[in-house]
Amino acid sequence: MLFQRTRSIMPGLVLAALIALLAAGLQVAEVQVFGRAWFEALVLAILLGVAFHTIFGLHDQLRPGVHFSSKLLLEAAIVLLGASVSAAAIGKAGLPLVAAIAGVVFAAIAISYGIGRVIGLPHKLALLVACGNSICGNSAIVAAAPVIEAESEHVTASIAFTAALGILVVLFLPLFKLQLDMSERQYGVLAGLTVYAVPQVLAATAPVGLLSTQVGTLVKLIRVLLLGPVILLLGLAGGKAAGASRPGLSRLVPWFIIGFLAMMALRSANLIPAAALPPIAAASTLLTLVSMAALGLMVDLRAVLASGGRVLTAGVLSLAVLIGASFLVLTGLHIQ
Image (cartoon, rainbow, N blue to C red; front, side):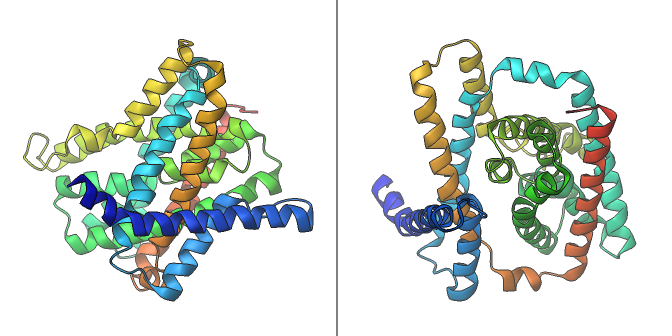
């Protein structure tokens, strides 16, 4: 059984690894030719993956390995990233920032839902888009769908929008850092409040610096932990708080978040040898690079464009709301 599973994932995994290797090589070539890397390897891996799928398609034999690489490898990278964060870093966030993050999440859900309804999205589809946009992308959509009894086509359309916009955010969010001369801490908060999925925070912040990655991940984890209360409220609103459609704990608190927190606790207790930290960081970076290639391989631009303009419009407008709210947090809390 294990052998068959390994055989099924190898083709897609090898393809993702080859694209990651090509992306790393292109980054090295950029430095040699231009003196700096205008496009980081993580960004190049995504672009190359998207281009491959859009031009050549994705054979069924490749899908298991691509899915494995885009999900499990990246989740493992997040767990390893926990070794670079100590409890002292969380203490620096402070209660005001935690409260501000919660306020942004609930306000963004309400505003995003309103935007969706105004442009003509059905009630349940608007809710799915709002949850995906405001909390954690596909994970929030999958968790909310059974609670509100969403139709399968609504789930598919909302996931398509998160796939497209999620990658666009990763690619273009660093421009805010460059144009506005933001500090690494400020950019980390911005990324944590706007990027859809925890894994994508790594891709959006890694080119900027380790501090941005740490801050962004912490902010994003706080957003993800709000998924439980949001799902509970949706269940109460629909009269299904104790019903059979309630998602399990694994959907509300994914295993990699528990792993991240466990690694962070080990680091804070000085139970991880200092000599082990650089190899752990290198392994996390490598897994992230392969996973970004796989993430790109899962996106077909033609299919995304065919999924519906109103959903994408709602997503873009909702994302603009998130970015605006993020800058309000940065200004209001005087984050430097």
